[in-house]
Image (cartoon, rainbow, N blue to C red):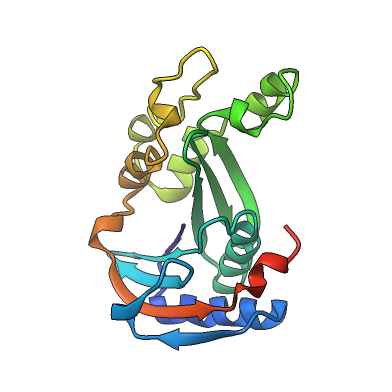
Length: 193
């Protein structure tokens, strides 16, 4: 899921449609009341527009978010969730990755030797995120806490843990109003990851 600051859902929809056109994936509008699980949903909330990507769309969501950020000259906050391996947050500005955080780096590792390096690589900078978005750093810091394999019940393992971060950033998913739904051809699954 991605949140784009300071632009309308109409602007976001245009970039999302162009992204699918450029990648050769067919898409069509569907009434917002008939959205299906594999659809792309664009919504709007106070000062933000959101895009809900299909399940398992990662890491393609980051490529699309980079284009959204670049083409709209906007800040984009993108989160990816998993059932047991926490969530990740990527902040982009004008098409550039500014910060990356993962709540459970062990979920990214192929072997135990990678966990420390991945933890450092994905540790995030809560002060930078707060500064870019103009919110108090103390409200953001508590969400930049990584779980370890020894802390199975840590909040970082909660797939919805990003909602607290987004709330601290001023992104209120529960207030989002549906704007448009794109039925996307399943061919997106053949796009390079």
